[in-house]
Length: 502
Image (cartoon, rainbow, N blue to C red; front, side, top):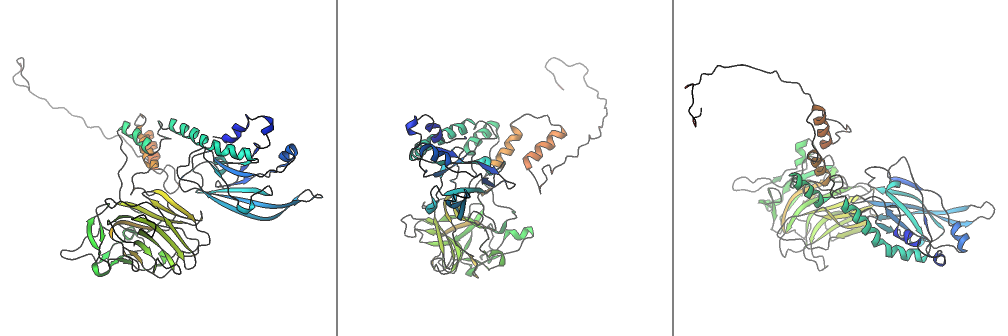
């Protein structure tokens, strides 16, 4: 998908419509940084010479490849002054940038209008493009293109042709679903069913270097008592230990959890407190993810499921909280992810009512490189907002599971994890990822002679790089010593009648 439908449609128009349908495709140049591209200098001299008028450009970004979830594009630009008639140059008055979050599941062929705000106009020139996360392969210049729509008719054609671009891209993507390398989600599962290789079911988290604390919440109470201290599973892997304290032993262990058992929070004072630690400090440049499984009680009031905030209802205090409730939005068991630095406050909502009969995975993300906060429900992005001027979220408060201030959470909680990274994927707790499943299917998708060389190649492809080594596994194989022998056997009787057997 290399051109907008608007450009292809404009080619069919007659000369009187040429000025309104005029477009200009900008040239993106790759740099040493794969996530960054510069935009070659351009002007609208040809348009002005042909039509004796300056254009009013609007810029459109086109995805040439499917974009990964959580992609954010930043466009840099410069605002230029009037043309100097002597030097034939234009002075740069100021620079600026605009961020464009790309919707999840964006296919090749999708296009997006860039919003330059008060800097829209022919005196603004785009200068650079960067993307977060960086492309898995190739460069940002190969993943995107930018077209300037110079006339009103071109802008109208883009609105009309945008759906056509998406349909064409979707048709192309559907055609690739019969191949393991390109299939996604349910299409990949169908290929796996043909091969007799099902996807791995959801599993609890294990070690992850970006995880700071992990609470499986499967602690077992002593006979006749209740759990006092809740284990941090990261301590098992030699990481810093951040145990939780079951205050008053009012949170009840042994409840049916998402994996094994979890904790029930039904007493108004039930809370697990995790003492403040330097690992939980969030500076103005630190990314973070808080996640867990919740199963709220029907009719439960507004409550804070996981929080590090003295009072999430108070905007003048720094901290964060994931809460479940109505929040005055008319959606029972809604989810809110709140962030505050003591001056500014950001609140994200799913505006979807959680089921009271099943566990739902919630994740709140602070992504500093992308400059945004995100809220996920069962691994699907529900809401995103720019961080703007939001500063550090550090405070001296404990992390609380089940209670914060005067708004206790009512329901079940399981598998809580805190990470010093901005996550966009939550495997394996929501099931095996497409990438992992695809690598396994590749082993069964073709017949391979089981020689030592092909076996080790298949294993390395399935495992993937370890510590930067693309072929970390080796195979030491030697023929075993053959042992032979003979044993004389005497058969009685010597003759067997028909139908007899030994």
